[in-house]
Amino acid sequence: MFDSKVVRRRRAALAIFVALSVALLTAYFGESGGGVLHTLQRGAQEAFAPLETGATRALKPFRDFFGWVGDTVDAKDENEELRSEVEELRKRLAENATGAEDAGQLRGLVKLQRSEGFPLGTEPVAARVIARSPTVWYSTVKIDKGRSDGLREDHPVIAAGGLAGKVTSVTGGTAEVTLITDASSAVSAQVMPSGASGIVKPEVGKPDDLLLDFVNRSRRVTEGTTVVTSGFTSQRVESRFPRGVPIGTVARVDLDEVELYQRVHVKPFADLQRLDIVQVLTEKGQPRATAGTVEGPP
Amino acid sequence: MRLTPGALARAALLALLAVILQLSGVGPMRILGGHPELVPLAVGAVALYAGSVPGAAMGFCTGFLLDLAVGGTVGVSSLVLSAVGYGVGRYREVRDPAHGLMPIPVGAAATLGFLLAFAAVSFMLDVGAAVSPLVLRDMLVSTALNAILALPVFALCRRLLRPVLLVDPFERRRRRGPAREPGPLGLRGLEA
Image 1 (cartoon, helix red, strand yellow):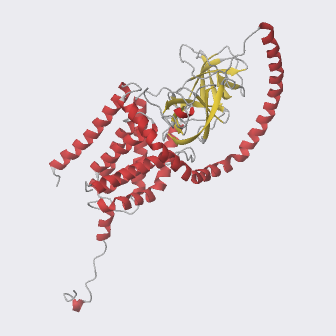
Image 2: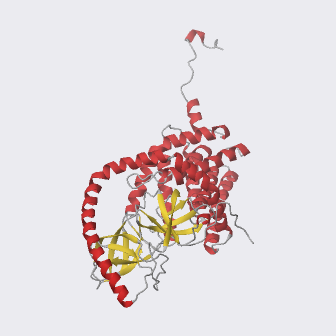
Image 3: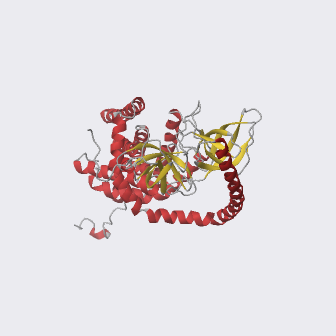
């Protein structure tokens, strides 16, 4: 009934595919960013970009329909939340205007130079999301702007006024953005106005709830305050983001008796599950290749 | 499945369609926290209609394409989808399923297997972040969505692969239908 030759051939086929996959995994981890597999990956991404752009545009009505159903269900709750947020922000705006006036005067008194962080020292480039990672374990999106538009690796990416991620790989016409919800992401951040600093990390499977970890227990953090990028280099993680990019608001604070640090839950400003348009913060005055420029060895 | 250039072209077209639609079409559609997963459905369909070895080959190639297109760790999806394709193919070879609704449980099982195995491999590769139990909920939602999508996706895959299949399990079912009436008793043996 069972042909042993067929059984052997079938098992051998499976063993070959598994061995090939493991070899690919090992080679990918072992090589540098300029290795064969990484180069192949960049080439494939460039080749797929026109297809992905076409598919994104063609299927937009379907995505909008599903989005509309979800939005309609959430609209009432969201409306109430936004009303209370507007009231809170109006109060803070008045406080900030007074604070900015005082800060300007004090800066003049001590002759402190104004540092060009966000948004003064950056030039935003708008881009459309053309593909996104299919699993929760890798939170990446692909955008339709690349090296020819002035994008470089580590440029910060924002959406809806909040930090969304950073550029991790660039080709001529596309770029890959690793979101702050990716398992490998870590952003040094500060709570404003208290100045308590920590590292924002994601929790896989909860894109609306980031964790601000390593915040000293002695620093008081209150709900509703804003978390921004701190823009400094710590021993644990080097910040690739300019100072002052808003990340989100403090949603909850966990105070564990045993822990040295408090855990702050942050609700991101950017809706990271529904990114359609993003902005890449390029450096101001950075030269850009024109559309007709061909990059190649001199 | 006959190993002809036509069969390879059809399988390649199916893999490309599944990957592109997954990344740019259904991937961004969030429904109750989950989203449809076209890739395991396509691999499961090929394995169900063509068998374990074509299923594993399709899984490997589609996974490789997916990893290249998405910029993820190359090899993870290939490993997981090869196993999914082989598993579904073996089920077909051992049980010989022929029921018209078979794509629903097969699609759901292929999706759940893919998601669980992908999570396991990701854990082994050292995830540097905390993992929420909500991941399990999202997996179940995606599995349910794929169970709904399984019938049309499998039908489309069958239509594409039918000319190159050696044996179509659903075709055989039709042949197993009721025997022809031989006619009235007195005329037996006289029909053409």
